[in-house]
Image 1: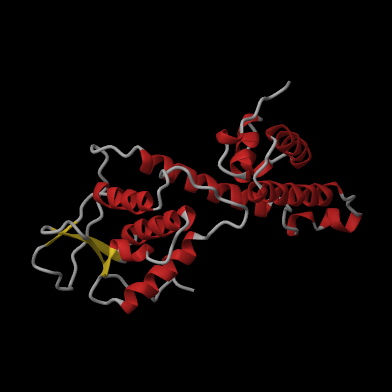
Image 2: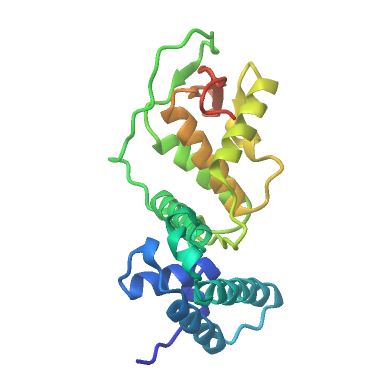
Length: 244
C-alpha cells in the first residue's frame, strides 16, 4: 500500500516514528524494528527534504534505526538465549524517547486548545508571607495563558515545536527550576523562568516541570491582582525522593 507523506504533517523524526508505530496498531513496547526502519527510510525519501537541518535530524534517526535493526537481527547463542531475560531490549531507548515525545505532543495539543471549563486545582496551606495583593492560583488556565504569551514572544505557534532525537528530560528541568527558586526565595516571576530559553521544546519542558512540582505540592503560583503577574514560590521539601 502506498502512502503520501507531506513534511508539514510531521514535527520532526519522532513524530514520523510515532505515526508509523500507531498506523501499524502495534504496542509501543513491541515495535517491529525491521518493518518500521524500512517504512521510515521510504517515507523520508518521499518527503523530499531540502532544509539541511531538518534532513540531518531525520537521517540521524534513520542511522539509529539501522543500527538498532542490525542489533535485533544478530543471531543469539545458546548462552544468550539462556540469559535473555537479563539482557536489556535494544528497543528500550527508542520506546522511552517515543513515550517522552508523546507526552510533549499531548501537552502541547492541550495547551493550544485549553478551555475555560477545564480547571485543575493546585492547592495547599503555606507558611510563607506573599505580597498582600497576591492571590493563590487555583486553576491551570492563567498559567496556560501566561505560557502562551511566552511562546508568542518567540513568534511561533504553541504547537509548532520540533523535538529531535536527543529529547530533554522533564525531571532535569524540575531540578533546574528548584535551583532557580533557591536563588529566588522571595518568589520567581513566571516569565523569568524562561529568560534564557529560545526553544519551544525547552520552554514546554520547563512548563511541564512547573506543573509537576505544583502537583507534588513543592511549589505554588500566585497572581498579582494589580498587574496580573504570576509569581512562583517554593513551599515543599525538595530534599527527598524527588531529588537524586
